[in-house]
Structures are given as structure tokens and as C-alpha cells.
Length: 93
Image (tube, helix red, strand yellow):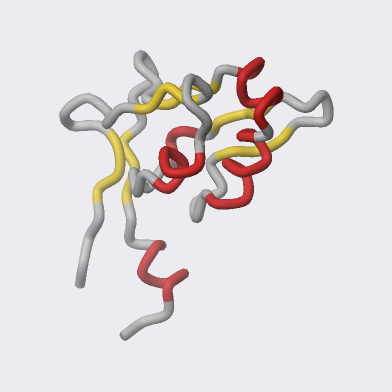
């Protein structure tokens, strides 16, 4: 089996520029510490803490694994699957 980076290189993302599927409530994320958790657990490094403490989101790289939902405090994260035809497209082989 090829190593993980090689397999992930085959993943294709179709970005929905009109409707981001991830939004962070900055106030709740900061107050609860969720922002740091999001940065730590996301395998695709979608979340990044900015110098001012806000959390930026590069949703186009989201693997749609749902790991962020498992650690997010209630109300800190708005997340849904991308509209049909958009999002991650896994390829095997």
C-alpha cells in the first residue's frame, strides 16, 4: 500500500466559492478554546490560528471526515456537507 501522502495526493477538491461549508463562530471558539482544538485535530490542516487569535478556515482542503465536529464546543462551528458536485472526491487506484 502506498504511503498516506501519496494516497492523499490523488484526492481532488471541487471548491464551492459561493457557499463555504464551514464557518467558525470566533467568539465561542475563543471563549471555549475550541479554536486551538480545531487546529490540532484536523488531519488536513484546514484550520489555522491567526496572530490575532482568530481561526481561519481553508475549507477547500476539507476531507469531510468530521473530526472537527467531534471536538467543537456547541455553537462554535457551523459545518455541513458541500452541495452536490462540490467538496472532496476520493480516488483509489
